[in-house]
Amino acid sequence: MRALRFRAYGGPEVLEWAQAPDPHAGPGQVRIAVRAASVNPIDWKAFAGALSGGKPMVGTGYLGYDAAGVVDEVGEGVAGFSVGDDVLGRGRNTQAEYAVLDSWAKKPSSVDWAVAAAAGVAGETAERGLRLLGVQSGDTLFVDGGAGGVGAVAVQMAVARGARVIASSSEANHDYLREIGATPVLYGDGVADRVRAAAGGQVAAVFDVAGRTPVEDLISLVPEPSQVVSIANFAAGEAGARVTGGGADSQPMRALTEVAELLAQNLLVIKVQTFPFDRAAEAYRISQAGHVRGKLVLVP
Ligand SMILES: NC(=O)c1ccc[n+]([C@@H]2O[C@H](COP(=O)([O-])OP(=O)(O)OC[C@H]3O[C@@H](n4cnc5c(N)ncnc54)[C@H](OP(=O)(O)O)[C@@H]3O)[C@@H](O)[C@H]2O)c1
Image (cartoon, rainbow, N blue to C red; front, side):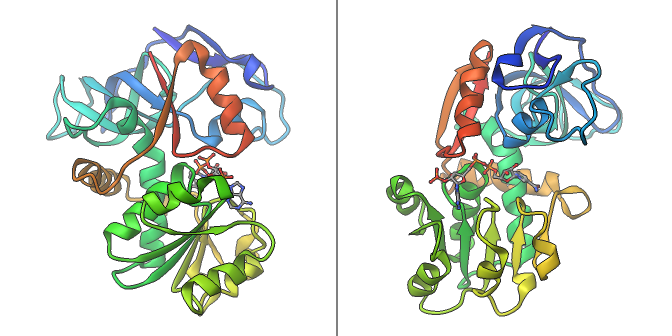
């Protein structure tokens, strides 16, 4: 099969759509014929070498943490899914013709493949953040970075739960934030004051998906520091905020099922821009520039 790979750290020019070993479903996994796989910032952090701990590149690197496709192998112990099912989910090395998923949900037939692929990482991360924050109907939530992959899903998931959502973006994305149900505020200096003005005081919870605002400013918005959860500022914990990178606090099957239901009901709409796999470098240049609206998705 072919996969997106890199054999040296660098910019998007190191990416090649080339031969790779076939993966196979292990226990508790499924393999899919990939119809679409999304771009997440962790992918370019990987090929840039930012996750290597300063060590030189060894072997070949592959990319992709989510995808949608058709099940063609079912691992031992998997119940309720069979060859031929259309699914969306999360895995490793998904930017390839075939990929193994560790967690997944049935893809609603009304949902486009690219949208389904975009829902894996963003959907699980959004569900995790809102669950850790205990966001409920009637709460006011501030999403710092509401127009990107994780942010736009978190906004809509919170709105679907009956929360009132204030979200930050550049001016260019304010109409988009209104479209998905949030009250927009401009990010950058003074953002906490703008959130207080929009909320009429403090908010119940802050979901920091961008990691750009000083954590003290975010903490000033909530009754206690632990009501700030960040997925992108790993120093935020020192100030009493909570930081999550997935793992033990992740409930991926449950999250993906919720995301698939929201997509089917049109309560979640993910704006996608698609690129063929052999033009992945173009998508990665856009992702690295840091102003994605919705998600970038690669398709065969
Ligand atoms: N810890 C985890 O489990 C986890 C999981 C998924 C992602 N992440 C991380 O979370 C981050 C976001 O991921 P993503 O997929 O949502 O990225 P993305 O799709 O590239 O979104 C980037 C967003 O950040 C916004 N932004 C840029 N500067 C900002 C600022 N100063 N303040 C607030 N927002 C700003 C942009 O808004 P404009 O376009 O309007 O400028 C854009 O919408 C990445 O660092 C990623 O690696 C962590």
